[in-house]
Each structure stands twice: as structure tokens, then as C-alpha cells.
Image 1: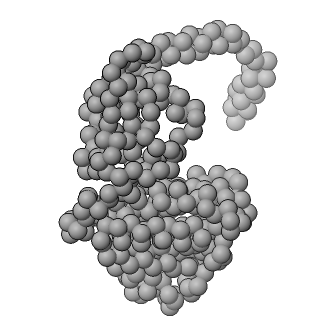
Image 2: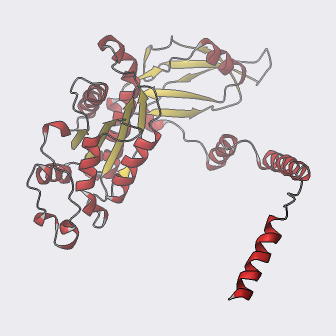
Image 3: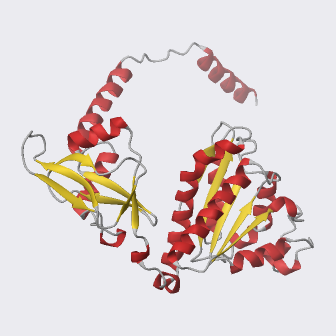
Amino acid sequence: MNILAIVGSQRKRGNTARFVQMIAAELEALAERAGQPLTTETVYLGDLDIGACRGCRVCFDRGEAKCPERDDLPALKAQMDAADGLLLASPVYMDDVSGLTKTWIDRLSYISHRPAFGGKCAYPLATVGGSSTRHTLRTMNAALLTWGYHLVGQTGLKMGALAPADDMARYQPAAAKVAARLFGAIVRQDPEAERHLDPREFAEQQISPYTDAQLAFLQQQAEHLYRNTDKALVEVPSPRAGVIKELMGKPGDILKVGSIAWTYQAGASSGGGSTNSHHAAPPSQAAKPSSHQAHSEEREDAGGDRRGGLRRGRRASARLRRACGRLRPVRHSGSRAAAADGRRRRAADC
């Protein structure tokens, strides 16, 4: 497996470059645990000689080999061809990608007409001091999608002008998430790589660091518990009705597979009932939610059930009717009639 990281920043010790380095370290750790050979390579666009696009259309009409710019772009394109996955990172400059990244995108615009990266995975990420990364990610997504890449996610981080070195540890969970997404997607795309994975190698699980408020909510009305393993964040449906009584460990503790992960009490709200326990299971054995349950969750995320949505729609329509009723017709002065008379007189003079 070969993953290429492209950094569109001149600063090798900046926020973007350091976050990419954290992701690369997480990727190597994942590959080592999975027994999967992995090669990661980071390219800094600031180190390459990539000239601006002249807009001559030679790459469109005669092929990219006839481009008048003789620089490092063909070599970088060859690296992209050889890579199984792409990690594209850019800082936010003027609410968009950096100039280095935009020049690189412009020079590869011919790929938009001849997509060359179908079946390959890409993950765009953007860093910013304090504003939004939305437009920057949209620019990168548009380029990657038209080139044929399969986007497996995106990340935008607000990190300040330059995050202190001792403050970078707070972004470690985000780096681990990006690495897991990209690594898992490439494995699923490559059957040969997936054959090397052994679920038994992920022999530990970690309890997610719930806050006291989250734990209290779980104890009142828990239906799911999220199990965070080395490979994935797995949602485990409750095997029966009840409430979480006790987590067998503190947030951040490592539990061995086969040990008791939590205990719960039968009965949704009763004070009595028998106490049951749940054993930790490997990620491959985690139960999946049913399709009906998944649809229910989607409806909840979308704002409730259908009946509630209809009620909200009727209320919105009523408010709109009341607002329209308060409008008064605009009474025009005689300027429109005078203009019409002037046009008639000019027509008569002609």
C-alpha cells in the first residue's frame, strides 16, 4: 500500500505540515498492527518547480506531454499514479486554497476531461487560524472528484496562527480519525490488502472518554454504547432493554477482548430488576443495527418523525400566510403613466 500526502504550504513547521506528519505516523501504526506493508510519502509543493498555467489549451488539444512548461509536475503526476491513496492538505488563504495548491490544481485541469484516478481514495483537509474552511474544502473536493477520486471524508481544523508545539497533542484524535478513514477505505478498495488483515490482531478496545453529563445520560436512557477499537469506532446496539448501570473501567482505560465492558439493569426506568453484563467482543463480531433502526435514526437526525415534520410545515405555512396578509400593495405615483404618455408622443412624432 502506498499513500501520498501533498502539502500546499511553504511552511514545513506550520500547522498544516505538522498535522499531516501526525496522520502519517498514525497510518504507519495502523499498518504495523494490521501487518500490512505501507509506504507513506510527503510532498511539499513549495519544494517543487511548478509554473502557472498559461491557458494555452495544449494539454487539452494535443496532450499533456506537449505542455510548454518544463517543470516538476510530470514527476508529481507519476507519484499520484503510483499511489493507492492521496492525502491533500492546504492552509486557508483568503477563504480558499493556497496559491501553491491552486496552481497545482490548474495545471492538472486536463484530468477533469480525462479522469485518471478512478477507484483511488482521497482525503482533503484544510487548516485555518480562526475563520471557515468550508470554501477551501469545496475547492479541493471539486478538483478531486472530477479527477475520479473517491472521497472518504474531509477535515477542517481551526488551529490559530501557529499552534504551539505542546498544543499539537490535542489534535491527535483528529489525526487518528483521518488515518483510520483513509487506511480503511484503501483496504476495502484493495481485496489483496484486505486479505492480509486479521481481526484477532485488534485485541484491545478503549472506552470512549465520556464526560460526567454524557455518562449520566447513558445511565438514564442508554440504547447504544460506542466501542472504540484500534480499527474502528463501532456502534453496539443494546442486546435487551435496560439502562447502563456501570462501565467497567475509567475513560481511556484499555480492556482486553473477552472481559466485561459494562453492566446494565433490566427495565428502562425501574429501580429493581436483574443486573446483566456484556462482554467485550472483537470489532468483526459487533452486531449491526437493523435497517429499520438505521432509518429511524436518520429520521431523528433529520428533525423527528414524519408527523412532527408535517406539523412544523403547517406552522411555517401559517406564519407565511400571516406575514403575507400584513403586506400592503405598493401604490405607484403617476411617473409610470407619464412615461407611457411620453412614449406615445414620441411614437406619434416619428
